[in-house]
Each structure stands twice: as structure tokens, then as C-alpha cells.
Image (cartoon, rainbow, N blue to C red; front, side, top):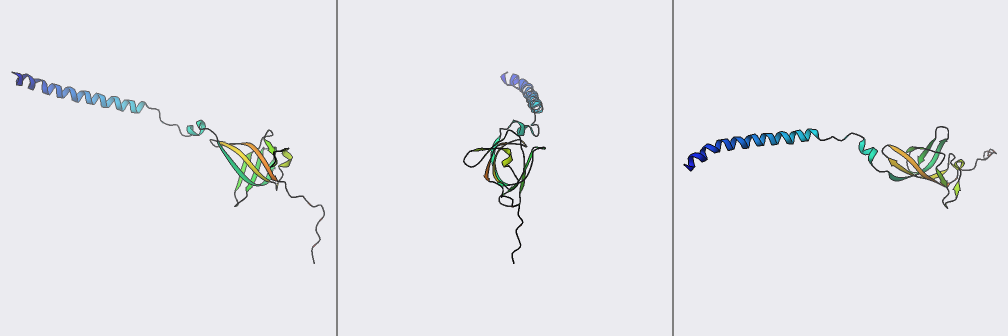
Length: 142
């Protein structure tokens, strides 16, 4: 008798297992579809700022557009930085300078933060002032 009852339940049990597996697979598939996908660019917004440094010679300063153009010390690389009136400018000894010290030709070291695709200048160290302009024209040597 046991063999007959066991054989009657076996197909039902197998069918129930198949149905349970199909339902479980459907739930896993539904959960995978409900997961939120990463939004492009969101990591840049959420990421913390990285501190960086750039050394070069000032090519131009535009206070009206708040833009500083600096050529790299090595190579021909040119970088542009947003220049706010509140940026801290100093000489190598830490003596505070005015923004007027940021003249074309001055050697500078710029400490800035990068967050996403935005740069923010923390401070500027003027390593060497721009060369003095001679009012007198040099006579050609003979």
C-alpha cells in the first residue's frame, strides 16, 4: 500500500516543486527589474572634492569674467581657473598679497579642489612676480 500512495503523491509533489521554482524565478526577476540603476553623472555630484595643485606662469587675468589663464611650467599645457575676489593670494613666506599681484608673467602655485567637473581655487602662492617692464628701449648693440 505504501508504494501506491507514494507513487500517487510523487507526480503532485514534483509538479508543486516546478510551480514553486517558476514563481521563485519570477520574483527574483521582478526584484531585479525594481532595482534602481545608476544615474550617469550622479557619482560626480556625490563624490567628495579632491585636492590638487598646478604650477605655472600666468598668461592672462580677467577680473570681469573671473578667469585666470595659466601656462604649465613644463610643456605647452594651458589651464583655466575660475578666479573669485575672495581667493587667498600670498607669497612663498605666507605674506598676504592683493589680487593685483596676479599679473601676466608671474610664476604661481595654485591649490584647488575638484568636485565633479568644477574647480574651486583654495589659494594661490606667487612664487615670482612678473618681470619689471623697462620704460626705456634698449639700444641695439653694435
